[in-house]
Image (cartoon, rainbow, N blue to C red; front, top):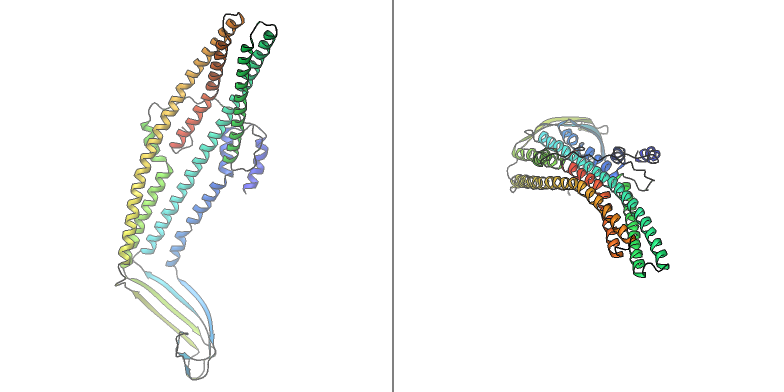
Length: 419
């Protein structure tokens, strides 16, 4: 099924790929989601297996033996001490009449535990979605940085050509040419680094989509969502209600409570009905050729070395461990939501600051270039202005996508697909 989905998705990857399409592909293709989903479905079968003990247990069989006449068995080996040649067949019926509700409590506990497994699937789905978002926006950021680096290389190559011409005319010193070449090499390093970041981001998106071979992505850009809640505390309350990890722990604690109730029933009597009937076609002499019996069995535990008490204590201690784990997870989630909110808000403020920085750096570069052309400024002043502009362009190019990544992190911390 996974390969069929990939085949249908392959033509889509040749077209522009939106973030929504990438998320849908990841949820459909990722093997980890499928694996946990199968595990959750397998856990849902456990209650049925437990409840089967409440149904009539009906079986049939055939047995035979050959022995010397008028002999008895002196060593334990067969169920009867009288050795006779016989062939018999029959049926047996058993029915649990009462175990004080322990079997139903065990089935209920297993059912609740299966529901907890479903919350694990939801948690992994959220982690896959945040991986898709992060890789998607990382590709856009890397492409933006690559464009900035390419433009910077072209601009600095032009300056190197101009300074070389002026140096040959002895209008500029070789020091100016050396500075210009250093700046060009620096921009080339930036281009190499940004291209490597782009390749790495595409590889991350391929893995997040649940694929092995990397197709040719055509990532679509999208406007930045600039809306953020004013405060973090309402988000913390929402996360404590929505995060699947906390719901999983709550269900596991509920399952443990049901299991403890079931363990307390171990000391109660167990009542079962037993019945059997059959024929013996080779019976000889005084032995009848058919048989049948029925009865009720009552089992009452008296002493077992405090086994039941120990089992109840074990479940109680596991319940306390789950309670403490739930408290710890709640504290961590509250911290993570507040941190994610602060990071997203700071990144949003950084959008405006980086744009102002870019405007000022461009103005500074224009002035430094004019002063250098007029012979009023040095190559050091021009080089510093170029470095400032490059840094501002890099910061501005990455700020918007960094903000989108941090918004996705906040969305994940809230345990939901949207903010």
